Amino acid sequence: MNAIPTLDIRRYDRDREAFVAELGAAYREWGFAGIRGHGIPQSLIDAAYDAFKRFFALPTEVKLQYHLKGSGGARGYTPFGIETAKDSKYPDLKEFWHIGREIPRDSRFAEVMPPNVWPAEVDGFREHGYALYQALDQLGSRVLCALALHIGLPEDFFADKTNVGNSILRPIHYPPITTPDVPNVRAGAHEDINFITLLVGASAAGLEVLSRKGEWVPFTAEADTIVVNIGDMLQRLTNHVYPSTTHRVVNPPGEAARQPRYSVPFFLHPNPDVSLAVLPNCVSPDNPSRYPTPISSHEYLLQRLREIKLI
Figure 1 (cartoon, one colour):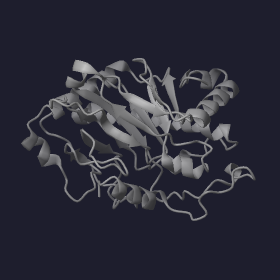
Figure 2: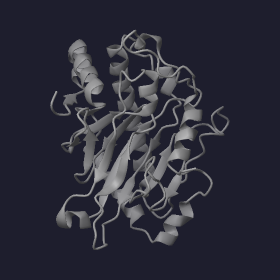
Figure 3: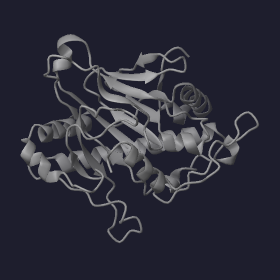
């Protein structure tokens, strides 16, 4: 498998066994795959992107009204230059917004899943932003069904572990580089924290994935394709059967670096009380358990947020 594959998820209903085998093999090798045939209307993606771009175009003092200090960036706006890839000396060159799951405020998870905030200045931000959140949440659940089958679990294994997941939709703006020296990396090399990440409609090239050979492989998906990758929580749960692959966002060469870049990843998280204890069927003599000490998904999330300087 010399290139990161793109698969049509509609085959899941037509030729399930073959699709599950191909998808599982892609993730075992790369930790990444492209998913087309996902059914999310392009009109929804475009409407959400338009609302997000209008928010990022607001004056800084307006955006800062939605920066909730002390919240770890869980909801609302996070300004430019705060998030820093683990072990990196330099912050990422981006600003972003977090949309979380809407849950009843008497939920047992209400303390760790705060209510959303919405920018009053941007028409359609809430409507299109949360509709995209829900669409990606549903698609992510379908991908998890296939991943469960590939490792011998029931198709619905993840259903009751993600139905109240602390998942995040993150519209990101990488501003144009205006300094004479153009830094190569907009977002430093990192792995994601969650179960899986779904990246919809990246507006420019720049995503690179680190192969098993140690080579950076560019992965720019077609317009109808959503990039889906494994996060550290699923890597831990599956004892690295599904690897969480290092990736980064680099600047294009020349004048293209002077253009803004927008992307919208959806980080699909398990419910806060889910244990990340290694699955017994992912342990073997050739792959002994790497994580003898269990940890809850929420404890793990807090640990990682401290590492990337969000709390």
